[in-house]
Amino acid sequence: MLSQLEPKNVFEYFETICGIPHGSGNTDAIAEYIVNFAKERGLDWYRDGANNVLVTKAASEGREGEDTLILQAHTDMVCEKDPGVDFDFTRDALRLVVEGDTLRAEGTTLGADDGISVAMMLALLDEPELSHPKLEMLFTTDEEIGMLGAFALDCSKLTGHRLINLDSEAEGVLMCSCAGGANAYTTLPVSREEAALELVELSIDGLASGHSGVEIDKGRANSNVLMARLLRELSAAAPIRLVSLEGGSRETAIASAASAVIGVESGAEQLAEKAGAIGRIFAHEYATAEPGMSVRAAARGRSTVNALAVDATAAVCRLLQALPDSVQTMSMDMPGLVQTSLNFGVLKLEEDRLFCANTVRSSMTSQKNWILDKICAISELAGGSTEISGSYPGWSYNPHSAVKDAVLAAYRELFGREASVEAVHAGIECGLFADSIPELDCVSIGPDMADVHTPREHLSIASTARTYALLKAVLTSGL
Image (tube, rainbow, N blue to C red; front, side, top):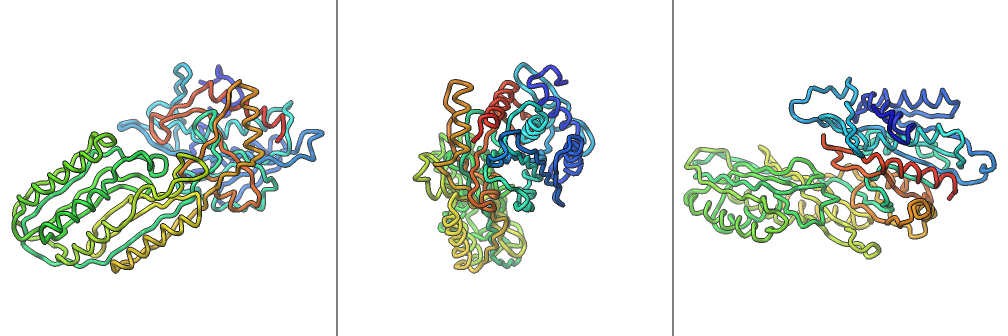
């Protein structure tokens, strides 16, 4: 399928990778392929129990005294397909489609994130005339489900202190900083009792949602936050009792929908009207960012239900209203960059407890810990508790990075224009490596791709060629 594309060796390797099932959690075959690649070429290799693979190539003649350069990409892909598509990600080869400058897969994710970078690394190892320093090609696993391979990696196996990560998705953009993060899981014990109540159903939906790192500064509404506001105002108007409550689907996504059922002794119709009026206020506040917002309330008559007591409902409402959300501080070093934020991602009232999940992000560990401590304090004041898990470090911007300067210079020389230097308010593997390898100097680059993690994922062929040329130029010129 891809034999006509250039650079030929890159797309040949990518097509091979697309024929190997390599979804997250299913990386044995791709790891075995890379190990065999190294064996066939007499290259040193190391494979660990997490299926991380490190392939080492000695420096070209005359360049033995230069610093080792690490190139890194992850081997797993997100497996999503369109409804009705007959495809088995554990068995089937991706069905590739070329349309002009675009490469995509028919009905499924393409896995260019990060398979095209794996292909570029293999192609570089197979360039016989390429002059380069000692190379350590690091292929990590299960990045898409929590950077599990990078967490498991024994970084003492690496000798280099300069690294180019190939997991970015915009050509000409150097990522030079990322946020660290952690998840905060809050629980508040509740008790229920049967009661005959007039019920009101509440729903908030139609919100734009988005990635809780990349889109957290876009002014989008969080349905869990809006539901907390709605319940707090209704509880001030009448002695409401919660029957059910849930919102959001995962910690790292801005919650797009929430629903609740509340009960009152009487006056359900009036309460529904008040909820509708509050919804119109929300719509006005978010008219630009959330044109699709819908807030609905409907009285459903009297019924015997298992509900929280009025005082327990009030405690839940106070906790939800107090939990922080969204941007907390902006960077003073990189204008426009969110430094610290959190996302109220999941909300669920269970039989005997309220459960809330928040994702906290910051490029400063001290501020990440500050926000986590704030959540813990709020939950303790409410009579609940918070468990912290999945903590990973951030990666601070280094204005004196030699790797950054070398890539910027090579880009300028090759294409006659300037690349930009940016940071991402999300976690990438560079943060883990920078935390584990003293004095690590790194950047993240990659070709243009879009709609990753969806069946609409597509890759620019020409941008891939330019990115590969950039990598060869950096390796040839030295850092």
